[in-house]
Image (tube, rainbow, N blue to C red; front, top):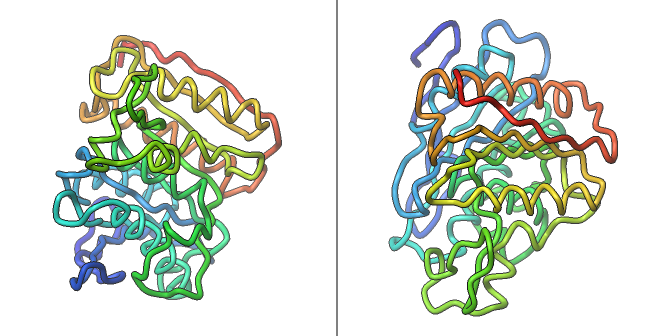
Length: 283
C-alpha cells in the first residue's frame, strides 16, 4: 500500500466482475479518519473507449486529504464490451462500496459519484437511474442499492442525438452503434432528471471543443426546474480537459470539496438551492 501526502492508496482491488473478467479499483483513504467518512466514486473519461482509473489520481489524493474515501474504478471499454456494460460496471462499483462500507471506513448513505467527460456521463446517468434494471448489470452484490447522495460531472455529455442533431448533444453512434431513438433517450442523463435527482455540481469550459458547454447548461436548467440543488461552474475560454492543468485541477478539486462538504459530509441539501458561477480563465 502506497501513501501520498498522508493519503493511503490501495491499488488493484477487485470490486466485481464483467464479461468474464475481474474489475479493479484504487482506494484512496484519508489520514486519521474519525468515524465513518463520506465516500466518492471516481469515474474516468476517454470517449468510453480509452483511459483508465489512474487519470483521476489527483482528485483521489486531493479529496482524500479533505477527508473523503475515494474509489477510482475501471469499467469495460468500447469496443471490448458494448453498451450498457459501462454503466453496469459503474453500478457494480457503487454496490461494492456499500457492501464493503465497514472495511472501507465509509458511511454507506454518504456516497457521491464524480466523473470527467465520458466518466461524467456515466456518473450522472448512475445518479439518475438508481435501481433501473437494465442499467444495474450483474457485477456483484445484487442486494445493495445504487442511489447516491450527490453527483459531480466535469464537462459531461448529458444528451445523445439520434438522427437530427440537437444543440449540445453527442451523436449516439459514439456510444451505441446503430442505436435507436429510444436508446439515445435512455442513455442521456438529461432524460432522467426529476425532483429526486441528487444534488449536482457541473463544471465545464466555455470553449469545450469536444463536449459543447450547452450540454451542461441544459442539464443545469433541467435540474433547476425540478428544484434539485445544483451548481454550474463555467471556466471562461477553457477547452475540453482543462483540469489536466495542475492549477485548474486544484481549483476544481477545491470546488468539488466545498460542494461535497455541503451536500454529502453535512447533508444540508435544500430544494431549489441552485446557482451558476462563472470562473475566470486566470488560474
